[in-house]
Every structure is written in C-alpha cells, then in structure tokens.
Image: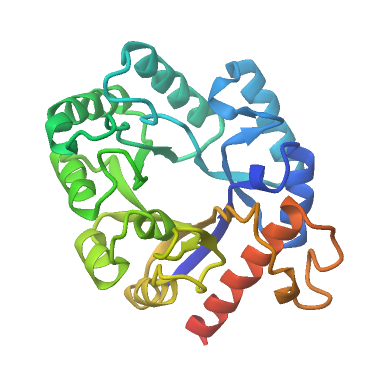
Amino acid sequence: MTKFMLSAFADEIDANLNTQMDVLDQHGIKYIEMRGVDGKNLVYYTLDEVRGIKSRLDARGFKLSAVGSPLGKIGITDDFEPHLELFKHTLEVAKIMECRYIRMFSFFIPDGAQPEAYREQVIDRWKQFVKAAEGSGVILLHENEKGIYGDTPERCLDLIKSMNSDQVKAIFDFANFVQCDVKNYPDAYELLKDYVAYIHVKDAVYSDHHVVPAGEGDGAVEEILSQLYRSGYEGFLSLEPHLGNFTGFAALEPHSPGFDLPEGGARSFAIAVQALKKLLNKIEN
C-alpha cells in the first residue's frame, strides 16, 4: 500500500515562517522541507534559536520532512573543515527538529573539468559526513543537482554505492535531471529506484531547461509517480515549485486555494500544488 505524504519548500511561498504555515494550511500540507526561515537558512541558526523555531512549528501542528541544508553545495576545491563543522551542527538541528532526513549535495566541480577527476575527493568528503552521522539515526539524502559530482544518475549511483551505508539514500529530482539532459524514465529511475527514499516535485523542459508545474514538462513525473505508487512507495513528495517567473495563472481552478491571490509566491505555489494533486488523483484512481 502506497502512502504519498506532501511536503514543501515553504520559503518559496514567503520568507516569513508564519506566512509559510498560513499558506500550507490552506492546502492541507503539514510538513515542511525547511530551508529558509525568516530570511535565513535553518542550519545557520543557533541551537537555541532552532528550539524557538521548533516551538512555533509545534504550536501550529507542523513537522519537518527534511532539513533543506546547503551541505555539499560548495566547490570541491573549497576548504572542507568549516563545512564539516556545519554538518555536525546540522545533525544537532535535525535532532532538535525530530527530523529524520538531511538534504545534501556532492560538491560543485570546476567549470570545464571532468567530474571523474574529483571523484576521490567527493567520496572522501562524503565518508566523513557518514562517519560523523553514525549513531544519529539521520538519513543523508543526496540530491541530484546540475554542476555537482552527482548530477547524472550514474554518478549518483556511484556515490551511494561507494558509501555502502543505510544512512545514505537518494532524492529523485525530476527537473534537475532534465536540466542535465538526462532521460528520467526509464533510464534514471530504473538505475536509482532501489535507493530513492525521497522525491522533489518540480518539472522542466529540455529545450531551454525552464521549470514548469509537475506533469507539464519532460520529467516523466506521471510515469515515475505511477511506478512508485505501484511499487508501494511510502515517503515524501516535496514540492519545490521554482515558479517565480511563471505566468500561467489562468490554470488555477476557481475557488481553489490561491485563486484570488495576486501574483507572487503563494499563488505560484498554488499552481504547483494543484498540478501535483491532479496527477495524484489520476494515478490513485
């Protein structure tokens, strides 16, 4: 039996946490993949400040699906020690937030360089992450992202298998693979499906790589979600709309959340939610 749980990068709605929660409530979403909180990434707050944020979430009945950290989103040639300390701090943040997942990356490769030339350094840094996370119960989720070592399915698989750890799993981000000109289905999905523990919902088109609502691009969102549904996937579908420049607001159904809002983050988010819920209704019925 499948169970899709909806979450979202709520900072794409608004910087203010209260506004984020207000809008998510309208859509019946009670999980946040927390990245920006009141204008600053969660991992840059002190632990006391994090406890305060947790209290605000608790008061409204919200939980985190993942810590949307920037870990691994530095150059592979940048100094690693401060980054490793930030990771250790983020483990404490996840503990306070009672959150099982930390979203992470595998380091930007210098322009024009072959990613394979930096494989050893990437693997070594990730092994240090894994060692620091031992005993925490936290799962390190690797996101495929353009320009990092793991921007292709093959290198994502290489990284995860090289870690040989139950604490390392994959995020499948439809749009990010499209923006790397990867064929999501069946190629990327079949290669990574045994390691996927989390889904980022945004879509994109091959022609110019711009982001569109789920199901309207080349990301094979419906096909892959259908496969996940049939396979009994239980986990989060985290909306990361990236629709800041989207102009197709006529697609919003009357009386739906966001229909009467002016153009902006909340209305763009409403488009993204509506698109995903339509797909899920089609898949589940």
